[in-house]
Image 1 (cartoon, helix red, strand yellow):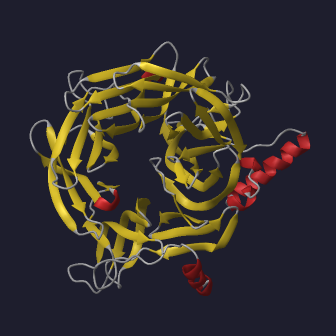
Image 2 (cartoon, helix red, strand yellow):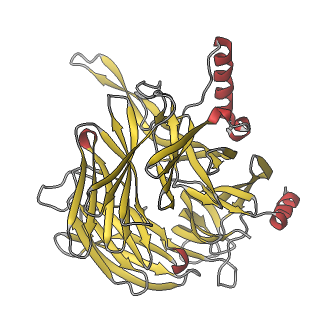
Image 3 (cartoon, rainbow, N blue to C red):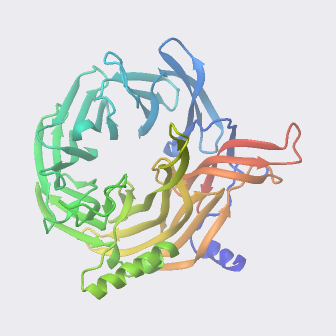
Length: 514
């Protein structure tokens, strides 16, 4: 194992040691963590922003959020206290040039006369900030948002299967709202066209209760519809569920996402599941306002699917495949997938998705009726989403599958669906990896082929005598170039330190592939 790892270090791109400007070679920041409140935003070569909600009440309406900005060597550059409406929670971010935009939303019931969404713009160089308050529908879910120049665009899905797009001029506060009425609709993705002053929205519109189609709609900054294209699969049963938009040129757009063959049908897990099952990935090309092709690639057809799946899932899949073969029906795989943003690798596209399922346990308790007779009853408790695999697939501009691979995920659960896995490419090789229990779990591959074994590289702590007792909520995100930032919470014990040997920290480390 040790020898193989050294060979990989010399020959391929793998996770190596975590280093920094101090004498111990560790680029790391730690904060005392009495509560899980910290958030982190990688801001490219400008640095990294860490922020959290403090207990300080600024006035009757606002609480203080503390922001700290670090350079690429994790040296602190500035800190700032920012007032945010007290009932709002952080939900998303967007980095545009020298500014980072933080979105806050009231996730509970708010009064009709209260703002329930705020956009905080922070300048990364001088820490100056501006706040824009916006009304959105109650309990609306933000799909994603982007900012270009002085224009904000956000897509929201909310109660009764309605969706809206908000286009707001951040200079003069002029606001345009695009509504999808008459039929249930769900926004899947929203993007500025970098080649024109346009907003493109991929929206799922339902013709019937369970049957839907994806439209790619283009709007100007006044919210006027300029183009609408139906993305059409080959068969009516094929349902396109996600849509990542990529602009190749002024007249060439690619749509990528996941699909299933359950359009108009109920799957066996629809009743109990939070998500929607996928059968594989698709790619569609739109040119001059017309669909040129759409190609679908099923997970079951990946030639290395049995090498990708973890043991538990593989046993289930083999059983299902045998049953399908015996009955003479087409076999398939259906998984709930957390789809990543589209990745470009050279001229090709890469789809990355994490497979999960909601996990529950049943609790029994006893009550007694008026006469003292025992009456047992049962209820179900949600334990979180359990991740079990990540799938990655390469697709060329002709829509063909060029390679597929993946990494097994063991014993990772989360109460919030978060993208845990990252991928890094260089010189024909790639690495899939995630942060789990204080280690970077990584796998090197070249197309369909695995290179070496799965490695578990310890994330360096502040002191060599630190002993990790617990690690939770581990994350790793691309930062810039071949650098990533790993972060999460650790409980560490160190008997050589005075003032108590145990500490719980929020940490973030700089990770490099070399």
